[in-house]
Image (cartoon, rainbow over all chains, first blue to last red; front, side, top):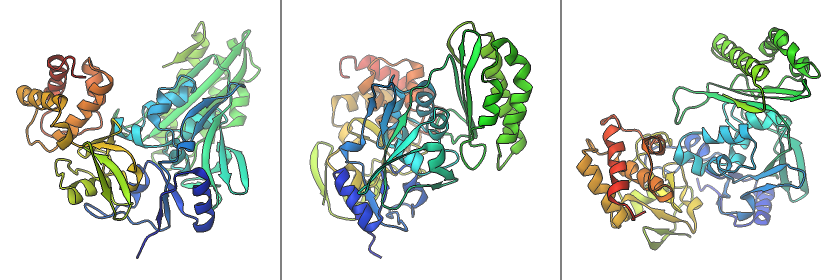
Amino acid sequence: MVEKCFIPTSLAEALEIRKETKARPLAGGTDLMVQYKQGQGITPVFPWPVMIISSIGELRGIEKGEDGSVLIRALTTPYEIANCQDVPYPVREAASRMGAVALRNSATIGGNIGNASPKGDLPQPLILLDATVVLKSLDGDREVLLDDFILGSKKTDLRDDEIIYAVRIPKVEYTHVFYRKIGTRRANAISKLSLSCLIRVEDGAVTDFRASSGAAGPKVIRSRETEAILKGRRLEDVKSLIPEVLDGWNRAISPHAMPEYRRNTTRRMLEHFLLESVSASSECIIH
Amino acid sequence: MIEFVLNGRQVRFSGNPLTRLIDVLREDFGLTGTKEGCGEGECGACSVLRNGKLTTSCLIPVGAVCGDEIVTIEGLRETEQGKCLIDCFAEAGAVQCGFCIPGMVMAAQALLLCNSHPDEDDVRLAISGNICRCTGYDLIVDAIIMASEKGAGLW
């Protein structure tokens, strides 16, 4: 079988190839080259045409918008994201804990989203921040909420003539923020569980509260219903509302394996974040 | 036709662009210093430098390195930096079976290129993607710190 493989050097060329052949983009290779490997000395075999997009300069880089949003183009690596102060804390933190040094130099944000693994590290904090995905095709651009774009485990809403161009993170104000990834060891660990939380306290009132869970169901979990429990409440009332929040969150997540462990640990992290936020005197990162 | 710079020389590869870089290095260019351990990017034995940054060559298709600069252990050992690292690994007794060492040396080089005076934590983070089943890492960490001291000015 002669496999089709294209190496476009511009976005325009890539979009043409995508439309004509439905070839799927391959960027860092850190997921796909493992998934379709054949063994030592043997070239990986893919069940569809492939285009290697790693040399397309238009798909690189991070840009800060005038409205405070941050645009991260698809080929940006976790190393670049982790080292860019314009990127919000939980996303930077997640990027800095992906794999180990070499993987962080090769993997891409576009790949991490397109692969849509429930254990992918970047979608979780991005969904917390209501990030959108910018998709390009010869017919034009489309921008959708990442939470809507990822449909489930390994499933996205990507059309077969589209390419993931970038992720846009809107400006989100918060006073306290938290990110934690739980893996079997510090390097090269696939997430067993991850959680991001943020809260915004203004004049003693909670004006925003969000949480998102990774690896606790087929896709990243937000629960607007649970988040609403704290919104608009006085800070001093938060402590007494924690059981209600934990209960709501417990119902929202749907761990596929070791559900008891995942539920307990998620509840403990969420409780820790809320208790620490209530007692913290000023804006801070909760560890 | 895929063209890239390998250990300072312009090279060409005309086979399948999806061929893994490690296979091209070992099979087509005879550079067998780069080892394959897990083949999944987990062990770091196949680490090379791509444009000065550490990369696992088992995960990257050769078609993705067009125009890039690749350095393997064979290229590094010809440089003053490489010689210093190799001497320090020997002096510190950091090598037992040796299988992980080319990857370890590449990881050390990647670290020293961006941080010429690393502390122990920096070194441990830099080699956190490289697995060694013999040494328990301590002597490797010593070797890298020794290189940063003895090779002062090289990086």
